[in-house]
Image (tube, rainbow, N blue to C red):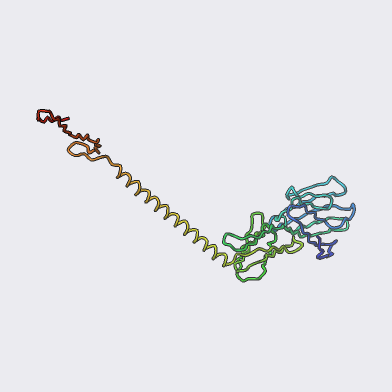
Length: 283
């Protein structure tokens, strides 16, 4: 996209334009119109936003051998009256001035290069149970808003090593359903996504379930301790009942088994003899 800003004629003409490039893509900058074969020299003067500068020039005076000189990055190449930047990055932003010498004067073209980086957007519930919207790696920084609107929103802005920005917006208010809106120049439409917010009620239920779980664990532990103590008492009682017999006067008390004793019955048989004497026979 090229937007003309100013045309000023001094000893030729000066043209200012704005070129918007995408990070990672190639960007082509034009050095004004083509005046034909009467070019005597072209100089690119580059001043980046990080205050670094470089110079790239070549000459074709009277159709002699071209003289080239460049202190710029090797990813910048010249083709006729264009300057191509390979793998454009945020650090390439700045002013690019082309001075084209011609037999009729000097033509100056100043191009303001702006580089855009599209962010990666996500919406999740964070560890605190709050909806959190993230826009990572954007340039310029993305803008985040919420529906419904709330005054209790935490916003964190972080500059990454590649000069892009990460935006983190946390929705702290209660709400059954919230929507995150993200705006950025690289988006054709506003990015939006909805999520169910747990709210304070869910947090209370979560605390209740934690207490219930802790109570169950405590009761289980007490039951285990009680069972172990009961088992120990039972084992101790059995140990006492199975102790060895005591000794009295060096002799072990043993259970004596008695066999049935024989009962002898004395019978008397009386024989009578004819003489009148009585004789007793004992058997």
